[in-house]
Length: 365
Image (cartoon, rainbow, N blue to C red; front, side):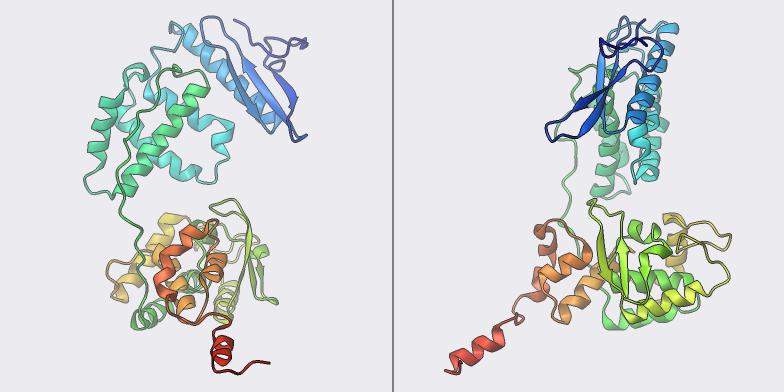
């Protein structure tokens, strides 16, 4: 067995000589980790961090050694199970740093529970289609696709790590067709009912008002820290976003007020804005527990938390905001995403319409 790295390395086989720097075309430096173990395919992977590269190489070498001790023949690890692949994928340093790691854990857990003992080498398209059928009852197509995509990520990671044969390509056309994105908005009566129903709980009220006033996503809301809130300038910084691009959002006075009430409460953290009574940051489940009684009391039907974001877009459009402005507030990276709200602004006057009217009347400077 031999952990291989740069030919110039003098520390082979000890888990450190298998990482070496590489200068990229743009002048930046990345770190290539290489592992070569007798009987297995040589594996190489690039990282932006030397520590991540080293951790990955050491973890993979340990895994290969473990497989070798238990008599797993090579190449391709025929005895590798879905559970082992999933555990190795989730333990990878790059995977561990994903902002949606918690959700990924839950999605992968389904595969481990139902197919953990299956051998990866025989886990082909028929098994995957069977899994898709098991996922479908009671789940929307988009939810089923998230489960499939999570396992696909683990599978493709396994191919790049040498744990899955390169020829074992993830099957195509597994994902279900999803309906066009819906856009459910609060009516004026529903808005009043929601605000009234949430007033008794400052935590729920602040979360709901902030979502309606700024259109931030649920994950962005839960990650919010007090350092991101500028009360004086009425501005909110959203640093960790879905598209990876930070943005600043205007904070309307009503949202400022709701946050100030929350900050004067009995449970206030130094960093996180939204905490449970025990001082721990709330997660999606706890937010759902806060939201459910409000939704029920307000008499909402077919309304999800994410629809508060759609409502923000609707309110802005009703008051004359353009699609470009709506997309900027919501943090859309692509204008095509904002087009789902196009029907809300069609026919509304835009900047210059009043001047155009005057010009057509023969009135111009």
